[in-house]
Image 1 (cartoon, rainbow, N blue to C red):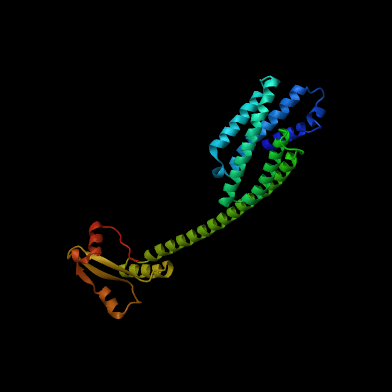
Image 2: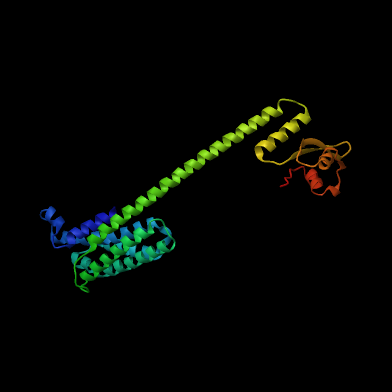
Length: 287
């Protein structure tokens, strides 16, 4: 917004028809020149700051800071320097404007190379704006015959920016919808998990018989959690042995089922992982 306002003020004062002078009766020539130059200087700094907000990672930091700082210093000098000294800042500012155009071109190509959202539309409008601004600077320096084209480039740039911003807003809205749908799915999944845990708690509390609890829990885990089989081993502290105590192993052969159900082995280092798990008193999960 600041960039558009300053460019509008500058373009209205730089042409043959001095719009602000026509709107304000008795506007002195000294003040009119200051308004024109200060608006142009502020436009340079505000544009580079605006560009840095769009794609901050692609904007060269120190070149931007140098050009922005120099343009602000030149703009501020218009409030206290005599007019004769102030107008001499135009030539170095024209060089700074060309430097700003170069920085903007580098920034644009970086955004294109990294495939930023809206970069193609931005690049096209920015190249047109940069070309028209460079034309105006060269015309003002009497290095190129022609007319001022900056206002037309600004109009194209604003249209391109509007389109690019609409693309960003649309993308943000789509992401919001996707996140909302994902959140709803997670809430639904979590609700189902809580219902399953409540059902498991109800089943376990139906009886105090260990075989019934182990069998019911195993069936529930297989039905709801995608587990293939589940079996419980108990440790007899008196004999220091591991014993089988039921579960869901119906998909095993009869020989394997008999092995688990009649298992009774002493707890010793030969058990390997089971022995270390028992000694550490921590859970172990086999996939």
